[in-house]
Length: 374
Image 1: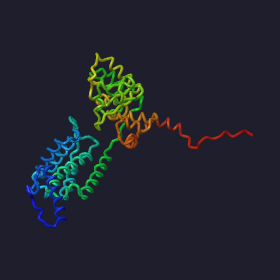
Image 2: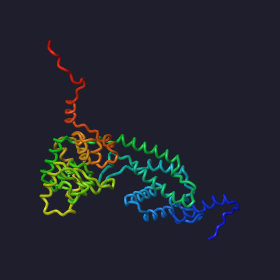
Image 3: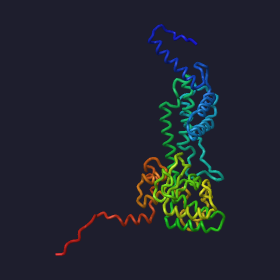
Image 4: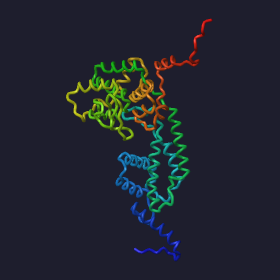
């Protein structure tokens, strides 16, 4: 197909040719022809979703964008039939404001009330919604239905910053200090749960000990199988911990990691394995997926402050720090990728017994020589 550039000047023709080629490249990517008439948002959304499915992005990333689509259509239902050319920066700013104002606090399944530390819309949720909107409107920019993406303008960026500060400020007001038990109270709790005399009490005690001895998140722990347990030093070439290791395949970040098998963990796992009848490599190590009820009941009977399953992860991190392990190493075991910055900001617990030990080590005057008698 021959197209005229409508000029006799060669330099002008070069610039027009470049613009025209960009239009046809965009048409190939978006599936739309240049100057094909109004583009409704739902059509741009359909193109984005088809491109998303055909892309080589990780499944978690695809799920992230699909969640963003749900958030947009739920909080801005009239956008579906809106011409993308009529979506302005002010519209996006107003939508961001309404998104936060209309957010409803999250109520966990089977719970009677919302979680105590929720404010409705989290920063991650806000990023997910705005990031997905930007990607969808990029389809319209590529097809020349928009000259610029209204969701990427300075006013939107500034509004996003204000909303993130607001969410974090509200969350900090609701944040509840994480309670962690002393080592003596932890031992008493485990013994009480193990001897509770009810169904799954022994499995619940194993669950509590496992998380406390490796610092895994709950979802990471329940997905550990016997094939992930390295009893023999160096059995797996990528694990070089002295004394063995636990390999966490299912993690929050999607990247597997290994945690050293300390003496308490080895004792626990060897006992559990001996109690099973020839467990398969793909069998789960833990037989229960939750033990919060046992923890709450045990804390009440012992008269100690209640703590959560996630508090066991804090127990592990705090104990490691108290015993002299450097922050970057503990952060690596916990699955943090910031070399210990989050660890030092979050795991600031000082247990009374450790505080007394540290007090006895402080000498502000420095060493003194004994005076020589005259």
